[in-house]
Amino acid sequence: MKQSEAEFRAFLQEIAKQDWIKRSERRWWPHFVFHYTDIRNAARILEDGVLYSRLQAEARGKLAVSSGSTVVLAGTSENIKDYVRLYFRPKTPTQYHAEGVHSSQSLEQSPFPDAHCPVPVFFLFDAAKILSHPESLFSDRGLGGHGYQLYSTLDELRQLPWKKIYHTGWIDQSDRKSAHEIIACRNAEVIVPRQLSLDALRFIYCRSEAEKETLLFLLSPTARQRYQTKIFASARSAPFFRRRTFVESALLTDREIRLRFSPETESPGPFRLRVTLTTSRTFVKETENFVLGPSYEYMIPLRRPLSHYQIQVFLDEHLVYANTFEERNLPF
Image (tube, rainbow, N blue to C red; front, side, top):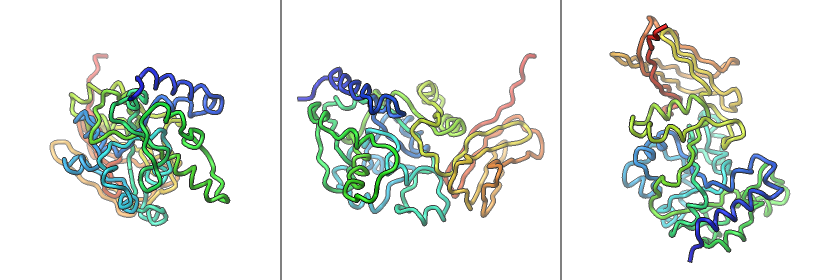
């Protein structure tokens, strides 16, 4: 029989207070379980009010962007694919390889060249609520292969290798067995069969203000009103690696559009850049072999002043920014 939510919460608070974690960026991790997905999937999840398993999302046509490696998915049991999968932590090894817009050259160098989550959005769920869910299970390692075991009780949760699950920083590869174990534990999961309501959703983290604007743009007015107080642009210590290209900020005016890309990127291009600008008509600007320059900025001058327009920006067909500009006539 499952213990109560209060009992799970008390244990998670115990972990958060331990010396090895409370003085680090990890101090808030035990309070949440994490799910990340591309921004277009995130918008659909918020519209539905439900997070589906991979199999359920595919069957319902809800998976706009698939970020999973075909090699890893091929080794994942069909049973596991019908669970909603969350992690005990952000910054997992899986996320390390998938996060951000890869250039084609960057993908070629990746050990998982088809694992690609161009614009990740994090959903942070109340860990105690999820772990006390009657059907939830959890593991001591990732579920993309073999060798894992599934657990459900608080006593079993206490026995998990928490220092390996929450391990950060460099891994000594000279001891291959130990390194493999840490990597596997960093991917430890919490799973719920078929679908999960968003009742336990506490926060939604975007990587930048520009990506927050994009998520809000993608939502219907109803969903935007319901969730906008939970949507935040992350600080640098929040759950992203930031190794690859993304839009950090955007300035929209009646005369120009100015995009600033992250200067931390390790994949500055080349990309195929496509910008669509919609007023009463839609205009498309395309640039082949777009490479970020030393300013990491991209500016689009408008031929004439526009009081209202929508903009969408794509890199290699990945939506990286979208928003609406509307000039406001202020009474002063």
